[in-house]
Image (cartoon, rainbow, N blue to C red):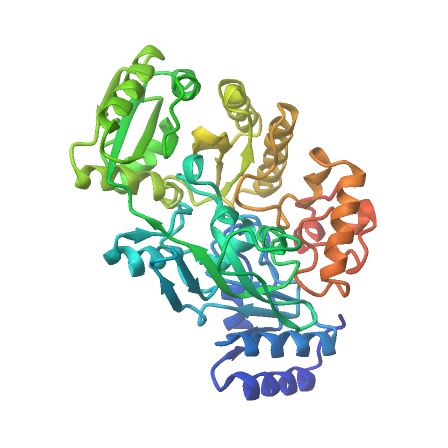
Length: 490
């Protein structure tokens, strides 16, 4: 897309304001800065416009306008994504869904809710909580992230081990396709006939269109919950405890690991009660019917002790449980106490490989002169190494990106994957060949092309760059960080 002249930009802004109303479109450079990246701040680009629709019809009209102008567009929720998935295409249109944030319908008898994509994840549980229900997918950013963003990335969370990721909780979607057509896929019941387009759309990272209404399952709150904290002097002991618990036939609702550096950050920030001198801590939760809950907790504690835990205890009450979870779920933010910046990695490995891969992660970080804090979903092998750095140090961003690439290679080498819940986005697009063959990638390209033949809908994401593989649609253009010599596509 050619750069817009000032006159054309003014005309388009007026046209969008006529559609959406005054105050619903941003185009001043200072205002656009807020939308130049998501949570992965290593990648930044400015859009020409940010628009705030309030209805599906608004979204469809904006998409049709973008098509008419040959303008790339991308949907955005709260901007908490961590893979550059909603990064603007250096120009074009960002469609912010934050004003589409209502709970439209709740059916308790049939256990579903209809919500808009800009609804904050936790707000749905707050809305249905007084009636004894909740929404199970709980990304650590659930206090801020939106359900629309969770749909795009098929997000997980601490309780994925028992309850699954977002796709396991979505029944149907109203979507605006990349050409502006509005349609429904799926419905209010399970197992609709025909192709599972809902399953296809969830996790497509905004390249198949924009969800404007979402039908999600809601669950009855469990009768009882018990949260166990196990403390280890060696990180290998904690890793081995994870496999030992599963080997006993137990499936906790959540099994989270926090390493020493992360504990220091969390305790500095919140004082949640994690022992500062521990090499690692496991936060393990079981839930369900009350009968048998004590026995499950006892067996988990036995497994932890046999793996070498120096201390194991059950949270005394709901207040302590909430404090322990606050530390875990706020850990990413807590890194701000000990580092000016960090990049959160996201890879998946077989659980049995945890001791080896965690050692390799620490070795890789050290080889690049970086500190790394690990806080992750140990039960499902979903790692989140946090590479800490100071962006004022010359050359540091290139080292962070290189270290991140090496970590992804290790995940692939042991039979894992390069993303568990954050998506591929821009961050990992060029690492797709680590886990997919050329035929795999070509098949996915054809699928994307079927939904998005113009390539205008969230271009440049998920697939290796044209420079490497000749992606159809949007031509390759170097990212600003490549132009600065900070990164190179392979």
